[in-house]
Length: 265
Image (cartoon, rainbow, N blue to C red):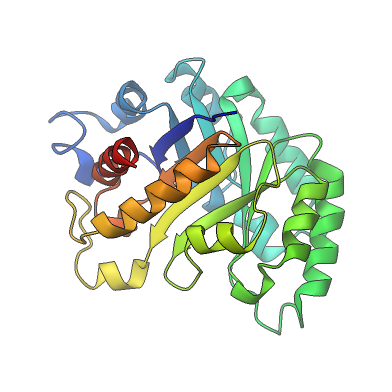
């Protein structure tokens, strides 16, 4: 099979995009509607900081076409505060609030930070907790999982996700191995599609700029490498790719550059 590659940004509510991406004078309430004329998918970052209300979710559904795909970050109260434990009430509330999205909800991302030994002495207790959580929810909602402990990206981890048909999120991040190396070293196809995130070095780029209206880091070589990896992944799965402003300075421009690199790959 040959899969599709859908590319979008991480979020859409950036005032700095008015002018370079949104037409001048675009009101904040019109951002998503305009975004959906240019992209067919988006990763929602705001849900990490606070659970979305049903009214908010209904608004997103009304502003996007039926084929639009949302990837939502799971609220941090579940992934960071509770760390998947004693969070059934929060998960049930979240799933209820997401119902207005219907088929627009492509996936919920479980994004975890770097776990130090105070949180988990090793990967084993975390994997056990993750296994229990996925056993409860993976059959009810499409899930993707991202961990940032390099040494935990092992066959055991990918097998655990595969057992629940949960997608492994592959991340281009300052302290993680590049996705092409991960694909070469592991069988990363664990779910019904692939999920790739281009994050970059947040602290590094913020020393250069905190205004997200233009590219400030030349990522052309990285994008060519990523494009080759994406073409390889897409030979056996559909792929969702999300790029944030911190990767090169302006998410929409990087999406355009990646698409160009893919056309040449």
